[in-house]
Length: 426
Ligand SMILES: [Zn+2]
Image (cartoon, helix red, strand yellow):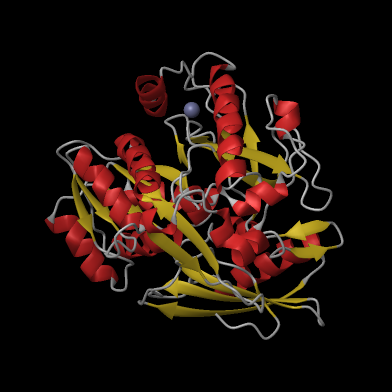
């Protein structure tokens, strides 16, 4: 209930009472759209014939915005003079779409994320404890930098490390500082866990936080077993100011910081609003963003939400960011196969540190290259046959599987891992 206490203290909203946060959000939406219409040329045009909404039904009739609007008309979305922008995040995307996506944040926008990290991190880090941040932190306003600022506020020693490139060194930093928590991308944390298990090392970890990519159940289970700690998940996309939703002790979905962000879920093709619990495209509205508010912005990510009370007592909406990027799935005769499905299946294998997945459309062939820590498992042939059988039965796809042992961690993963297509390189 840490987020709930924060929201109560900050805004006086009783999040344990059903509907209270929704009322507050609707008032913010009315203010937001009034301001966007008056200050931003893009929104003024978009809402030209539309009245400022005063009900949820009216809000849900507003047109969507999307990545192409951000790419092509980003500056016109600004609601403040450009001089007030403190940080610009440029996202280059794969493919040939051309223009990069740029997102603009004022100091106040970044402070809101730090405030969320300060309170959200209290679920994982302890005052007086030590937390190592295995995420990029050197640039002011980067996710690691904002996390470290949040940790300082809660009197936790935060150590900025950056992405792990050498496992031994990363483990040494955890050991010598007696770190009781860390923050990392799931696949990087898994590589650490492989190293720790292989070398019989016992760390001092109490809790860890995973961020930047989907956390599958099988990865979570191995991390809990090998690192002997409680695992928390976090969802943060740049558009949402890097921090959006965090796990609670009930571990049943991540609670959204609803005092700043609103998520809806729509059907990716028909754009119809989906009921709670159904998976679809996450649509984001930034309720308190000053510089470049996003209103009904189609994120291009699969996910689902639930507004029922959580067993922790909170009515803050919970989010599951599962399914990955829309368009990255492989369509097959019975539905679709996503990177997350592959994570769930493959990472259940002890010692598997990483893998690459590629799909050859012409041959309907899925190619998997598995990277095991230090050595291949003894039952490799049976393991490969089992994986091929499961994928064939569930999807009808042919699979070609190769494997290698490695002691080295691949240093990338600043973005979500994806299934590569014909001719695509990493
Ligand atoms: Zn909860």
